[in-house]
Image 1 (cartoon, helix red, strand yellow):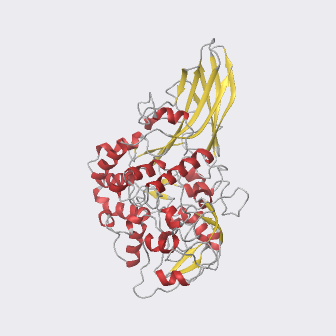
Image 2 (tube, rainbow, N blue to C red):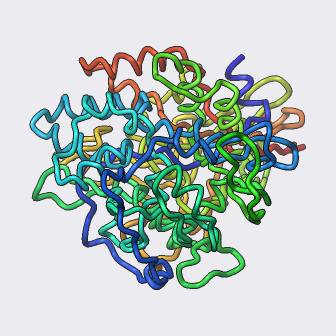
Image 3 (spheres, rainbow, N blue to C red):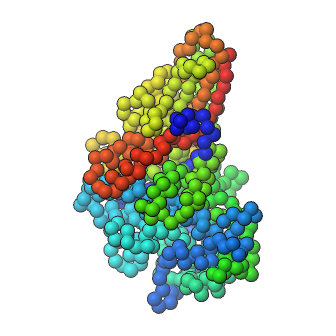
Length: 555
């Protein structure tokens, strides 16, 4: 039933991502560009009062920035909750520290390199429990271990309100901000996207002074954590673990050289448009007499990991998830909807049927402003192409089993890029495959040294002479002239009976965030975190998400 649903139902599905694992300092050699973020004048930080805390938990922000049945603020015209707290609570960002797969991967990294535990903990927590990291940095103390952070309510808040909204614009868009190295200061300034904020209520209840900060709308803010370099050894070259921001810079979506008709920031794609509304209400639940703001963005942060959101919902009590099941289902549904409708497009081209042979091309288009898939390097997608005659399957490349494994493929981490498919062992899989310093394939982030394969679809408008082209170039696609910015074209050639009646070609683009080979790599770990994840993972539905489907009848 799972397989049938995955293959025939209209499935909702993006990318993004969950904040990925950072295991070393960001590479200072990454190309830098001056952007409007640095060019804009920064508001002068306000001095903090004695005893002032630089961060607050999300519940304090929820006093005024959550939905109330007695207020029209933070409510859509349909009456739905559009509040920052209500829409953020069920996201991967809110649950970044609770993420059981990240915790398992991190524990495995430490298990393999115990002497590096302090470095791994400190750097991983920078993006998954940023309050714990920045609190230590501001105090001039050592960054906490993950075991200590686990008992800190602010750490369990994940990427919480006062991380993004307390970040200054100073280093955004520059290499010194990458790896989650946000410039957060021990002052009382908090930034928002709207001009002329009303300061009194926030000062009274939090001690912060709300200040107009256009940079909170910028892709550079997201790019700080979503550009991650690691090093397998102190003297080894940096390894680009993920780079959605750098990929976006070399796309038609970038606005850093001046906005054009195709420009879209990360927030415009991944934060749903809530419309016009008041952005706060009184702590007693009634409305403030404040202006209605236009262009309010919900904090749903729709990424590409519906699988994680489902796992959080199914294990909410054990993982300490505070969002309701309904809120988690809403985010998972929004994720699948965005992936299914605005992420990719398939087209069948040049179909030719001659005696005993059927040939055609499948064109795959990336509709996004970053690679597809992007983010954490486990993510992959592939073409499942089937040729049928009636109820009989004559040929299939990319078939999968109930665990999401590709049928007939012995080693899923050794598949080359293909431009022509002639049998079931040829599968067009778009992914990253990493090697360690000894040239062995690895799924351990700390050991990744080179990319043996990176044929993920390039963003729309990617250019070989564009920004960060060397860092984001494809690997292993040499000789494939139609693998270009925004698309790829794969030729299929199959033997079919000459007397077969009408034939149906069905092509699907399948997507996984945690492929079986990545999950099974944790089976050798003796850590409790790995055992917990594997136990939870065994109970999940592993049918891949479907990003696109196309079918054509051939007489």
